[in-house]
Image (cartoon, rainbow, N blue to C red; front, side, top):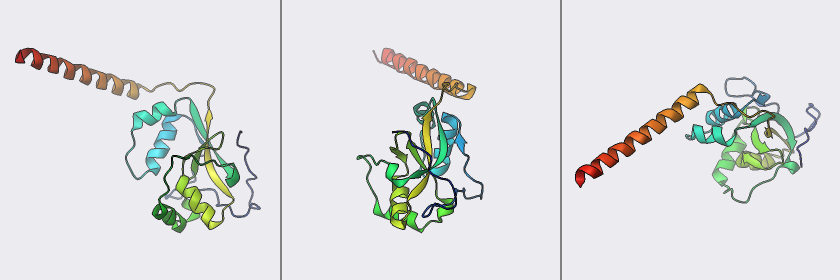
Length: 170
């Protein structure tokens, strides 16, 4: 099922206004590639993320900001719900709440607790970044190429040192 954008007018009740970040800037309408998606996740999470893993995972995708009905959102069964986190999200200003990140079929990738908090507040629609496949695959940047070469060189150097130590021990 492909997510259809809901009416994005002020007539829709029980909907947050278009979300803004803490500096008062609106979130971008489109995250164009895997790097922008990863930067958005890093900016919004309170814990460190593996940059290379997320860039690789979202390679070939983009995100579009849409207003989606709560009935179109699908929870996965592997998510644990922490009541304290849901309670914390209900206290936040709805204008600065982060958009959920969902796949085209409605499966929530990020934002389970924000969805539960919104339903507790009586929301019927949520602002979501819908992950869509792009027509052209992402081209790796030079910095990622340099980083991967450096990691490979370190691994080879470590293996050579280990072999030299084992030879010396014999």
